[in-house]
Length: 152
Ligand code: ZN
Image 1 (cartoon, rainbow, N blue to C red):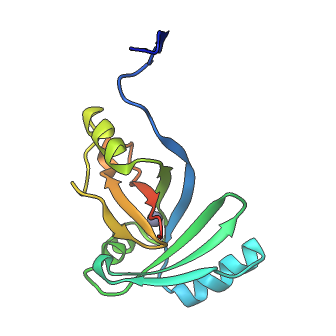
Image 2 (tube, rainbow, N blue to C red):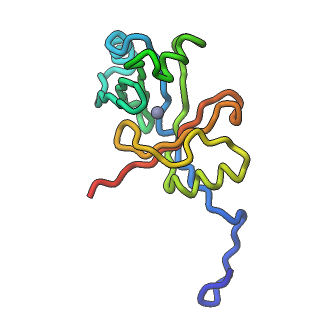
């Protein structure tokens, strides 16, 4: 590619925009009790608690340096969190990566052979657009991509 006489070389034909691990999601049976445990662990309480009706979850978020911990409790028996706990018990549910351009990243990962659980980004907790990759395409780990929604 040439621009103003300067030659640019791209290693890949698509830019990769994974920024950092944004948060780790933990499935819990009782979020009130879990909040106390994580407050004791991290030294401060959740900075946000939020119900995401569309996902059937009650969430709370803790900061730990640059990263966050998201606790998730099922808000109804059909919730994916209820099913996860039934099958595997409480524990790490997903790893979320912050991306700068979620649509591009979804397209890139699809081309890399990952299975997307949603074809379109959806509104998740904590003011984010989110998309998930099937655990079977990522060595048993449910991967979340998230992009901060800009408030104007
Ligand atoms: Zn999450």
